[in-house]
Amino acid sequence: MSAPLNGGFATLADPTAPVRLVLVGAGGMGRAWLGTILANPDTELVGVVDLDTSLAEAAVSDAGLQPGEGGVLVGTSVSAVAGATGADAVINVTVPVAHHPVNTEALFAGLPVLCEKPIAPTVSQALSLAATAEASGQLLMTSQSRRYYASVAAFREQIVSLGRLGSTTTEFFKAPHFGGFREAMPHVLLVDMAIHAFDVARFLLDDDPVSVYCEEYNPSWSWYSAGAAATAVFEFAGGVRYTYTGSWCADGLETSWNGMWRVNGEHGSAVWDGDSAPRRQLVPHGGVPADVEVAEPMAAVPEEIAGSLVEFVGALRDGRVPSGEVHANVLSLAMVEAAVRSAESGVRVLIADVLEQAYVQAVTDETHDGVHQKLATWGSAAVGLAAPVVTPL
Image (tube, rainbow, N blue to C red; front, side, top):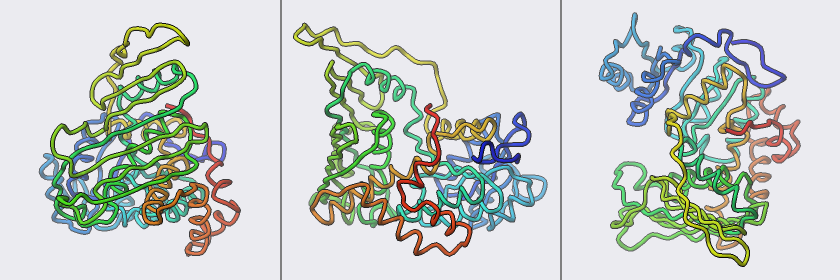
């Protein structure tokens, strides 16, 4: 790696060579990432880390690769496998509770990290990771994969033409039977799924939330233990009200995994069903509504996790701050935590209160001297998170 650019994160010494990657986590999502890494000509898989090495070896073998010496190195230690392979970076696809320790180990081993969402289980841990990225001089990026759709970019362009915005809504209704930990976890819809929509709302509106009121419930037929359905109303800094309503036990007429979106502004409305091209209808003041316009097809781009990987590699090569950089991503996680607090308390919750309380907790809990010092110099979450400048997509 080369020295940090202008006090930012370190970039690759050779920006033309394939980025040598260690994948951490060999479960179902890990296998999806493994295939994505192999499909990208700018990346090379050199190691797979998992506490279950037999699982990791099977994932490597099933991909047609040779695990072990002379092939893809398998092990249980991120730093050991990365050191032995000369890796450039890490892809963290572990369960959320492992995100903080794995990211911390990798960053202080001199390795930038692309981490699956959420960046951490709590906002306080996310703030710790933001300070860890600063202390290590390495890039930590969250893979908010739903930003990487050509139709999302087209929808954003349509929204700009609507003038001052009033209301934005997302309807999300699916009925997946995951089995495993999701069906037992609390606040399952808000914590495990809604962050995708919350993050996309920030991206589309180019604005940040200031408060939320949320009600959460579990339909009587739900196969989840709790919180399979919720409605949250966010106020954004520019005055927009963003309403998210959804259920994970909603059989019949399901929405897409991206949900159904509508944005209304002073000049008309735009809608997106999450799958096909977005549509817009402009209405001049006092005039006749214009014809409905369907967004022009956009050039094919890598989507979902493939898009995350492309932006991560690009950032390591040219130093451009990616949209999922940890400091910028903390607010998406704060939306989730604030919604959960509102659902539990029955009152409107301020995002700033969530951030500052999390900051106090992060300073109290931090055990690494260098990270603690970074957090202390912030003085507040607002100051610390405002430091990096994120380059728009």
